[in-house]
Amino acid sequence: MQSINENDFARIDLNLLVVLLVMYDVRSVTQAANRLYLGQPAVSAALKRLREMFGDVLFIRTSHGMTPTPRAEQLVQQFCPLMGDLHRVIFTPQAFDPEQDCRSFRIGMSDWLEQWLIPDLLSALAISAPGVDIKVVAADPWQAIPLMEQQQADVVIAVGNEASRDLTREKLGPAGFRTLWSRQHIALDTLTPAQFVRYQHVLVSYRGASESALDLALQRVGLARRVRYVTPHFSSLPLLLQQLPLFATVPQGLAPAWCALYGLKAAPVPVEMPDYELSLLWHNAQTEDPANRWLRDTLRSLLQRKMTQA
Image (tube, rainbow, N blue to C red; front, side, top):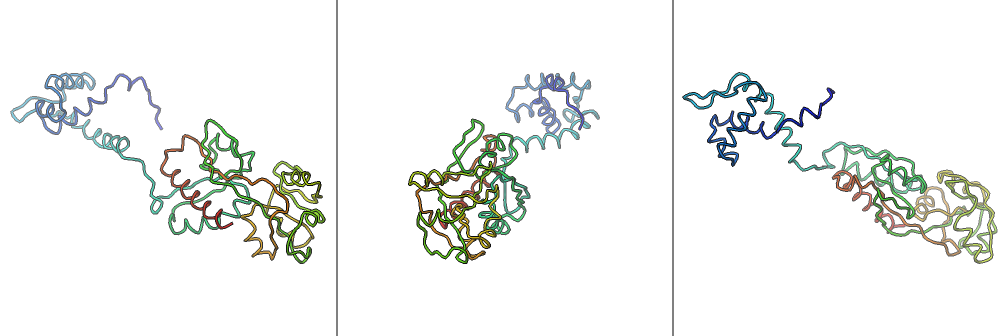
């Protein structure tokens, strides 16, 4: 792309180009003044400045009105499409039509949210927004804020309450946890605190910690558990539960699918522990963008429906 010298444009009044195009159309200073709601002296002064700008008389007074010179003809041919494009850019409202437009969106989320949401999201988009593609960007609770501050995602589905002046966080509501196990290895239908700590546990930790809020809740009632396995990923847990006598305490949204697909049993966590808060997080620069607003509306509707079902 050819570089633009801003100083060149600083010396030019683009309103003069409007006078040039109207003069070419009506071939009369008086009629140009009427159309532009200006006085004749103002149009005459603009015409003088146009002549100085382009080094050409541009219009010759004849018995048929103000006749354009070849230079004026050339300028009008070049400026007409440019001014039309400029008008569309300035005055056509930005819009996004999911049924017609093609767009790729980057959504930040952790792997459990991907398991929980993406199958339903892609199924819905295949019908309502066939030209929309989705790219998931890994975003655990510690990555969400810097990811969005650097605008490496369009929206992040986040857990937590961290804030940034550059971002907007919309809280969608709390959600809880469920404990899962395989009845082939742990023959229980219900779960008490004593049974809960009798068996070993698997834990998802994005920073490799061997304790979580659940361990603090157990300490408050004088109990402790052994965490046998720590991983930053949820995907391996149902396979481990199928093979070993282990408990996994996970976000409640995962429980129905894991029970159906892997034959697991789910129960409420047998000690009181805090819920987590699901939010949408986006950069303030994207707030008024129609495509981003549509994406947020779509994700909000999906999350609220899934949270009701969980």
